[in-house]
Length: 184
Image 1: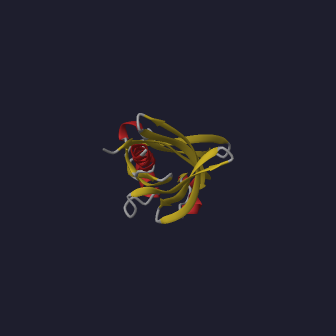
Image 2: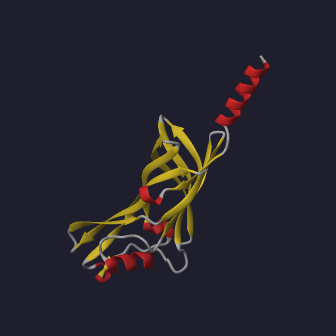
Image 3: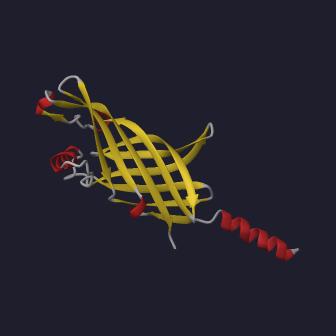
């Protein structure tokens, strides 16, 4: 009987043991998708993808916490001039990273969310991001997206020719696929 209780205690304690994960850069990316009015009547979509992410995720007793750093100068929109402008808009000189702080994982009405903060251009905002979570081979993969406003982060929506040729709408979609590898 003592052996059974000891085995049970080991199994229960290992189920709630702290586990740490790091971002797998080969299988992770973040992106933005922005809509712009072009020549006053045509919608244009601008997409930038970023593979330069780093961060960590910890789980313990069902609690999930983490931090993700996205290099503000590494968005690729297939246009070098625009890429440089994106770095300027994100104020890369003063804030090298967009930071997502994960404070908890919650389930609401059978939907999964990551709650935390989004730090862009020196502004920190609380966010709740709807996500899908996949666990495979002791790794965790989150995918999700949210809509925010440039103005929420003290950023003027980008323009071309002072807005006469092109002006981005204030809303911008930010999304990611983040693969976390279990640390040894």
